[in-house]
Length: 317
Ligand SMILES: Cc1cc2nc3c(=O)[nH]c(=O)nc-3n(C[C@H](O)[C@H](O)[C@H](O)COP(=O)(O)O)c2cc1C
Image (cartoon, rainbow, N blue to C red; front, side, top):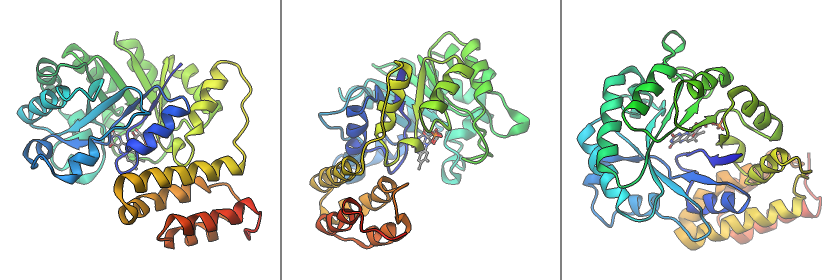
């Protein structure tokens, strides 16, 4: 089974991806990058330096772009594919955020199949790398068009698809519709990755059974839990797998913090890490109080002190 880390803006940076690769992830994608922003930004602009950075412990990495103007998308795909950093150019046709769909990008493209296909065609022509598409199952319940959409973008040259089994209207609510992903897989001849609501080995096995896909992408389930890849791999290999002990969780959280600070500096590294620390302690005793304290911490040594309470079993419920 091929396991991917689903792209998550503000989360799946080089440090987090590296940890996921170490735990068995086979493919990751950068956070989404605005094609127009990338083309017009000064070369040394920090935002793009960070968005496009990758580190040594990473495996294959796709770069994801969003936009709705075929010329911008084509130029961005060409330039990014020439950087020698990435294994594919992925086009975001699934983002539900208002600021993205307002510009006719992301999941808004699911309402305009000819434009989506035109973007893919031009990116495929301009890119030195395979072009892939991340999509949803439609705009809303009344307009589920995943199969027609998938056929159009693969006819236009998309080399693989990742389908999040929700409509744009659902955002992240309700349950991912894996049956619709199965229909897409049957309708196209390129590899289809199933995505949505894979939280553990049981849901991964069930998603693979329902969709028939041999590639799965996990997003939220990996937050504070890079072990998810290890857990799922073990399940498909029929091997036993045990949850990591709290000592291992604390050690990885601190390593994540150290690497982030080494990359971004203490101030912005700590700001980035607050959410991650909160996710690492999910499920532990006294998590609400721990989170509040972790959110106020301004240095890694403070975090170390707070997490040592967990190790010494000194947390309160
Ligand atoms: C905080 C957050 C940020 C996301 N950012 C992106 C993104 O930049 N590009 C993208 O294609 N999908 C993005 N997604 C969607 C995820 O890739 C994935 O499709 C979705 O979370 C469903 O998978 P899951 O149930 O495993 O989380 C984001 C999701 C979350 C929760």
